[in-house]
Image (tube, rainbow, N blue to C red):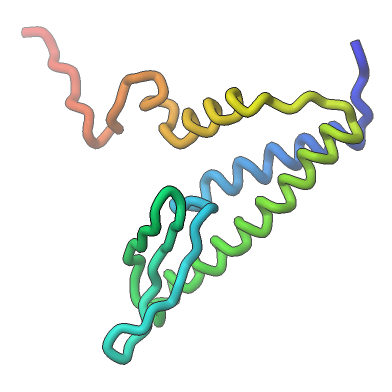
Length: 136
């Protein structure tokens, strides 16, 4: 079995950590963008996606500091996505690690988006599930 150099193991660990951080920090798809839209003299944030069709979802007023922080954080996540992609290509190209085929990657992305309970077919959350009844 081939031993993986410490440098590449460190890169892989960083990739895993950065991916976990990004998955917890965003509620919006990285394929979209936030846009400021003027409406009747005020500005509002909307989240816009163009694939598969153009959609725009209201986020909130542009002068709200919490929303402004999340918009800035989202841009950092998108920038980090580019960095993570570079780490993956380096690990595949230079370390000789195998990347997943496209189908496997799509399955993993879909399962991640569904969450652990939904991907197992359990559905619901603690708040929406009814508690089990005690026998009488």
